[in-house]
Length: 212
Figure (tube, rainbow, N blue to C red):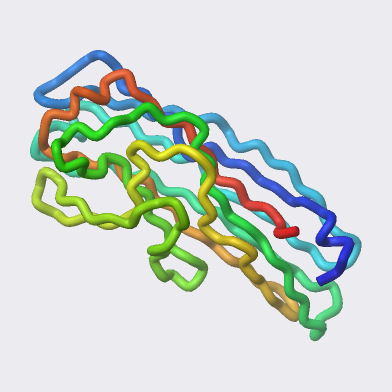
């Protein structure tokens, strides 16, 4: 890998979610509103090969009594992080490495069940379409929602800190290659009293950057 690239930090931020629960209630549930901020993009490119990062829209979830009442389904928000490598000299293979981290800056959600069932699930798929089941520091769990459906993902209900979704992940091409990481956030409708999370919030963002 070109030493110059090792010194170049390419970073793109996308706000994954900001969750706010209002004090208004219905049935057993609070109205849950998720608001977001537009992504901030910072990009640096090299003279020869071109490595760029991009993301989808910020996740925006809005739950009301019409779509998150008792007996209704979960709410899912989706986005992605992508890495694109273009090689200037066709036929010359180049390899670069990058990181993807989930940064949860603030989170005061709590578990509302005695069994600590996950209420916020993170689901990630790698560029090959395989579900990621190992993120250091996060627990991969299963939870049954109020409709009896079993869901799987990383429990981020009370999580804070920085977590590596991909660490020093390689992208290789002799012309052009793109990696897309799909990210889903599931607000789980447990079908139980979740009032304890009224007025709670979580603030997090996804960061894609060149490995040094």
